[in-house]
Amino acid sequence: MSELLTKISYSFSAFLSFISLTSLNDIALLIGIFLGVMTFIVTWFYKHKTYNLQVKTASLMAKSKQE
Image (cartoon, rainbow, N blue to C red; front, top):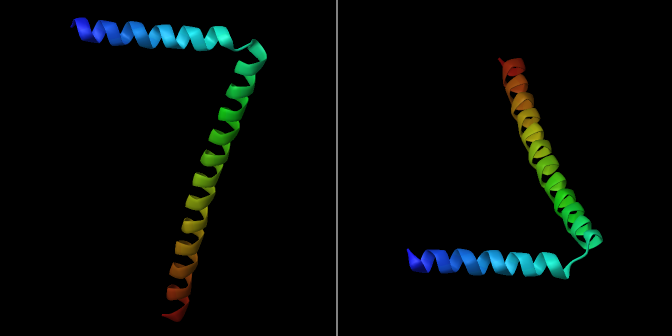
């Protein structure tokens, strides 16, 4: 239990020291970069799913025309 509290205390201390070293502009920049990257990943994921669905639909339609 004591080790856990020590790790939590050190982690919180490191977090606070990081916050104190950065200005509000730096924090906003980091948040903006993070949100931009996450937007790219989410958009790519759903575009990829849409593409796979279109390919599957096209192949099913081609099979039904052959029959």
